[in-house]
Length: 269
Image (spheres, helix red, strand yellow):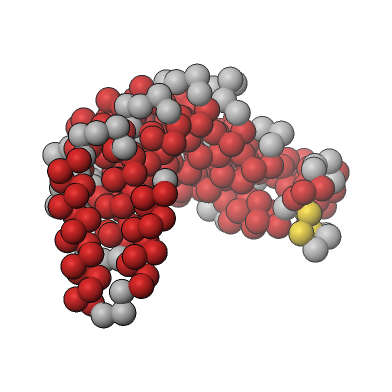
């Protein structure tokens, strides 16, 4: 996008605020006049750059939303970036976005799944939580979902739960979410541990089965060392996951099962 590069270069040359304001106003007038043309993505990029610089952007929101419906990844990506920056969770345009979000969550394209998850997590309105939480949960538990999609889905649900815990049916999800802790992907388990810790704090009884799962996973990390070398940090296997699992265990009493208690002792020693 050569026009965007030239615009940024022009702004950097402005040594005083008045010159920058003059260049911004000129560009805004140009965008207003030509926004309906095919270079919509470029104009949205320019608006976002102005917004990042601190200028008020009171137009172009609808055009940004329309980019989300594109089948081109670059245009869809720019549309989602725009709504996360320009729209609030109470914006009237959010309802238009929700239909596109649902479509991208149901898509077979994992990149579209990820863009939608990013947007939901960053906007996180009540209406989004009520309408889309189940679709996000399906991505998390689906055996067809790739690891990187599951990680984003877990953290997206965590964000929604922290903001609108009364909306999510967390109790009925326990049976399906807890098995994620048995996933062989360390990254997926790390993300899921953050989500399950938040859920267990509020619903300890329903998520009590996380205790044996967390202990088994710790044993696997500390004693069996059967995991990818990418997760070793200064000779410590997946330290962040270990911390998360230990933090999860602190919300529960010492298990009555003698075998589990012995496992904990073996891990700590």
